[in-house]
Length: 401
Ligand SMILES: Cc1ncc(COP(=O)(O)O)c(C=O)c1O
Image 1 (cartoon, rainbow, N blue to C red):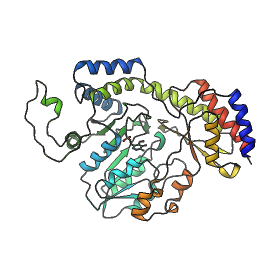
Image 2: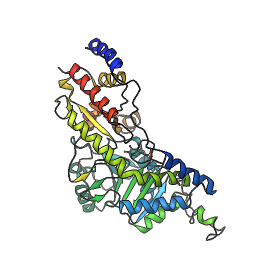
Image 3: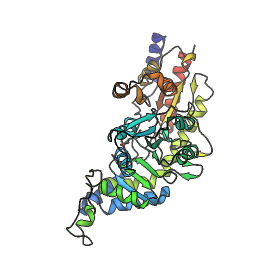
Image 4: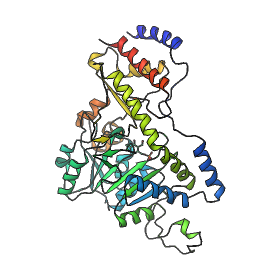
């Protein structure tokens, strides 16, 4: 099998893509460069008027009363948990099928991430399993919208309300996304976004924390800048003064005006970039949904999927090649791919700390073993999309049982 595919690789390289297609690329052009230049030239390069404008615009778009810009989604989730008063020894319910950040922020407080398994269709936390995981120590629920497909927020909120728990959304993948007609960012008590380099809009590094709760918003602002009661921008402008007070040992999580300038331009492109990702997802579905060796990602008319990731799953019993070989074959055809996510409970830190074994969350573990993420970003040309489809189709044809 291997050599048959290796021989085909030769032919593919001759007729196929001449250059490597990266797994992800930011959609940046002269507009971002111009915005960054003007921020640099303004003389105000850290948190200031551009950051405030970015917050205001973002809040309007997602329909939140308050948005506070920070330097990552990780920072956003950290200060979210601080604001709700998470204490050492308490518990936060979340999913194991996610990136490091979602659970590490719980550990910052010496609190315990309590994982519940995911739904095999959506890869989002299974709302039916939450109630059983609640104990007197439970303080919050952190929901992840995997790949940008909104989790079942109505069901999660119903459980949370029954137990008086706040819901924090890790919406790192979910801008712009909608749940039953409502923008993600306007549904739960707190929503945290990421503007990391590979995300659906980017500021290089960056994040936003949204809420309708005024006192939390005030706390986010204070804790994102050293626990100081007035922000630096106000201190150094005509409206401010030299006086400030430290009211808590805060963090250094503020966004710069350089990043915010870039974010403002990215916001103007967000719809166009989403439309392109939707088109690519549609093309992939058209090409792959008829192949029994593959499972295409779930979509649903009741939501707007942000399509941050295209999470293909292999029906391995129908293939003679492993997931690792499938990935190698894609790489040999110059297609960049990735795997999302290695479930948190299988990582050494969590196995050592809590004694987990992979089968503790069998759906997360089983789905991870057959997942391959394909490139999906607005800078992909029709030819790039066709190359991915040709490569996947070729590998499946050669590798089917
Ligand atoms: C689900 C999820 N949550 C949180 C993060 C962290 O985002 P940031 O890099 O902005 O801190 C990521 C980043 O990849 C992520 O995938």
